[in-house]
Length: 101
Image (cartoon, rainbow, N blue to C red; front, side, top):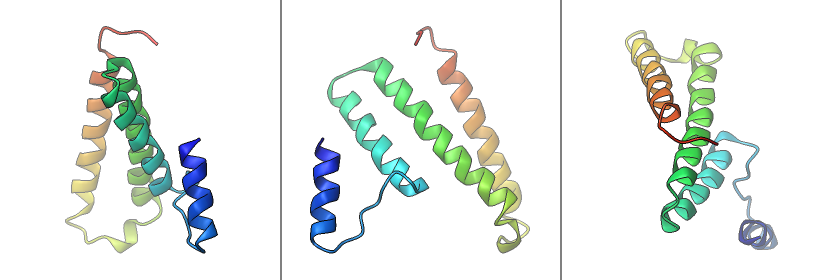
């Protein structure tokens, strides 16, 4: 409800809020979920929020590799690929924790 109120207030002031239709907007929403889980000391919520954030970041990296590759210098491409692989590994570690959803 607070997020909806904030979006309304931003629009009322003729602003353009970050919404969950963009990667940045999705990350903003998920960051709030993560912060809430941390404040509640909800380990399962923290892990779930981490996986959701990971999914958005992976989408951004995959988009960069599939659509925006031509804009990157050749020496940057291996770094992007390495970071994407690292994201997959880290997410797999989280999924292997002894907790069930």
